Each structure stands twice: as structure tokens, then as C-alpha cells.
Image: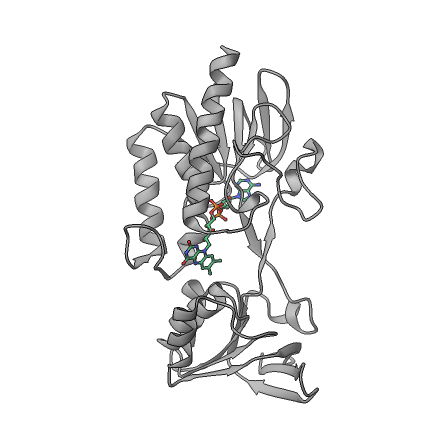
Length: 305
Ligand SMILES: Cc1cc2nc3c(=O)[nH]c(=O)nc-3n(C[C@H](O)[C@H](O)[C@H](O)COP(=O)(O)OP(=O)(O)OC[C@H]3O[C@@H](n4cnc5c(N)ncnc54)[C@H](O)[C@@H]3O)c2cc1C
């Protein structure tokens, strides 16, 4: 079996940047993902804050990043890593699909997944009338009415996108809008958007067919029903580090603890991107982490040899 110099789990911006830096350090690199390369940005309509790109479509940026890894000879493969067996000189990656990979160092860049509200009716419509991906499912709602749940950057950006397709977009958020002021102003100015701030979602309504939501004002206690054809949830993210808990590198909040060199407390295992404990989860910070993790892995491997 090939023993790679470095195996990178997750091919989002963090993993792909780590792969680029590791390949440029002359390492034999495996980039693994359970899905197609790109990570969360594949499903992001417009990115407006990645240095030098102005406004760029997420999928286009993902393709550019992936092509960059391929120009440098990075090996991409599919696999859902469920565990890492760590020995001093080699780490074994166990995949759900039944195969294993070996590497001298590992960079974990598995990112996050969307959080669910956990209220009545949600499971009945999850994946049909309730979606977490406006770019994937938004086109179903052309000229229809949709609800966007949440008030942070993702909710506001995706509500702006949905307003370009849907006849009407209703934003329901537990607090005020907390996204970038520029994005909030843009959303508020759209004629087909209505915003309910300080409203808690109580229930998704409908028996066979989704018909809307019931929400309650946290200020007045008044309950409202908003009818719509579909709903999009953007209420935060959950780390995807369950597979690495046994290594003792995951904190109580589910994120991987790293130092300034992206090193975990297990020698030869690094973390990068949204999966690590940090303050700002963005593409530019994920890329930065990936670059640092790859440099650290290269130094670790040099010492091993
Ligand atoms: C709707 C939305 C809009 C956003 N807009 C912006 C924006 O405008 N600007 C900005 O800077 N940021 C934005 N972000 C945040 C940005 O997408 C993330 O910060 C960035 O993608 C993090 O990159 P990452 O590589 O750490 O993780 P991710 O992009 O989450 O990639 C993780 C990868 O790991 C894979 N993976 C997970 N578990 C496993 C496993 N066990 N085995 C194998 N593979 C696995 C996943 O399939 C995925 O491909 C947005 C996020 C969302 C959700």
C-alpha cells in the first residue's frame, strides 16, 4: 500500500490550500473527500470577500482551486473517514466505504455542516420543502414564496439570492439581522423581501404538503403563521469531527483544538479550516490555516526521515 507523505481529509478551501502548499513542498499528497471537491463553497452563489476575486460564484472558485491542486499532481480520492489509527511513523485512515489509506502525516479539514432547528414538523419536510442550500434548491421556487430562517451572513446572502428567483422572500430571525451591514442594507432594500426580526420558529406546518411556519415574537409573545412554498434554514453550523474524538483532540464544543502551527496534541496530526476552534470561519481564514498546516506537516515529515 502507498504510504503518502500527507493525507488531507476534506477538500474544501482549507484542504485544497493545504494540498497546494504540501505539493509545492515536494510531498506526495492524498486529498480525500466523501463528496466532490470544493466543500461548502460549491453551494454558495456569490462570494464577495475573497481577496482579489471581487464577486465570484462559489462553484467557479472551487473548480479553480481544485484545478490548481491537479496542476501540482495532488492525488484526489473519495472516502468518508470514520477513524484515524495513529502510530508514530504512520497514520491509517479508515473509510466507511471499506478502504484504508496510509500517510506519515494527516491534516483534518472536514469543516462543518448546517445546524437544524429541531422543532415540530422539521423532519417531515427536511430535504423536500426545507432546504439548507439555496443554490441547489432555489430554482424550484421561481416565482413562488419562500421563507429564509436566520439573520447571519449566510442567511442574508442566500435570501438576497433567493429574492432574485422567488416572487416573495420572508426572512424570520430570532434576533436582529447580524450579517455585514452592506449585505443587510441590500436585503432590506429589496421590494420582494419582508423581515420578521425577534421571532422564534415554533413549527413547520403541513400534513402531506408543506404550507408554512408558525413563529412567535420574542418581544410581544404574539404568534404568527407565514404561508410559503418552501423554507431555507441558515441558523449556524455544526462541526464534523465525530470521527476524531477518540484521538482526544476534539473540544467540548466539537471543534478540533490546534496551536498556532495548526498542530493537534497528537504528533503528525493537524487541523485546518472551519473544523478547528477559532473566531472567524471564512474562506480566507480556511486557506490560511491550510497553508500553515501543510508547512507544519512538511517540517514534521522532514524530522521523521
Ligand atoms: C451558505 C454559506 C455561504 C457562505 N458564504 C461565504 C462567503 O461569502 N465568504 C466566505 O469567506 N465564506 C463563506 N462561507 C463560509 C465558507 O464556506 C467556509 O468558511 C469554508 O468553506 C470552510 O472551508 P473548509 O475547507 O474548512 O471546510 P468545508 O468547505 O466545509 O469543506 C469540508 C470538506 O470536508 C468533507 N468531509 C467532511 N467530513 C468528512 C469525512 N469524514 N471524510 C471525508 N471528507 C469529509 C466535506 O465533504 C467537505 O467537502 C459560507 C458558508 C455557507 C454555508
